[in-house]
Image 1 (tube, rainbow, N blue to C red):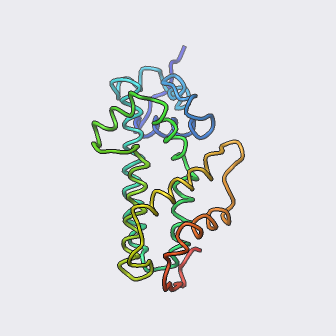
Image 2: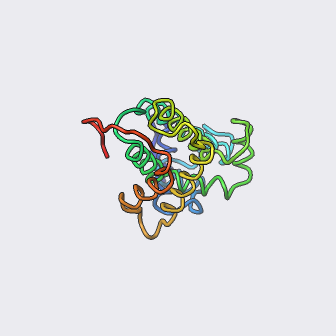
Length: 206
């Protein structure tokens, strides 16, 4: 009996399979057998590329963090364009409207995974959420430098507040994602008191 099919770019396909499982069935459904079955390959493929399943999950999360780093650079470049509320609404929707919420649940539920992630990226805080908070803080600092956020704004408090409120909005997998207006309302509530003179550019998405 065939045990699976050969994979090109096996790591990427295994990661994609894992993300589909997490999105569809939640983090508790993520096992090595489930990943290889979803990818349509032999069970041994995953272990030829990774020492064990926690090593696979670690690389999966690190890849998500790398994508977040690229997203952070893009968000910072958007400072001064569109509106602060619009830019934050878009990035938080992109962040939490994807596999990120389920990956965070995965990190919380697996002690071994958290330990390996802290070895790979030393520091305090929960991996992925820590980088997401840094992304928001960096953007808010850029807007503050441009005068669109109050000079005395407490960015170190605003960033995790935005992150935590967004996580709560998107955490209900069964109820579906929140409406865009709900995300925008939350962002406005959190930062409305510190937003200053904004200009809207023609290419603004929100």
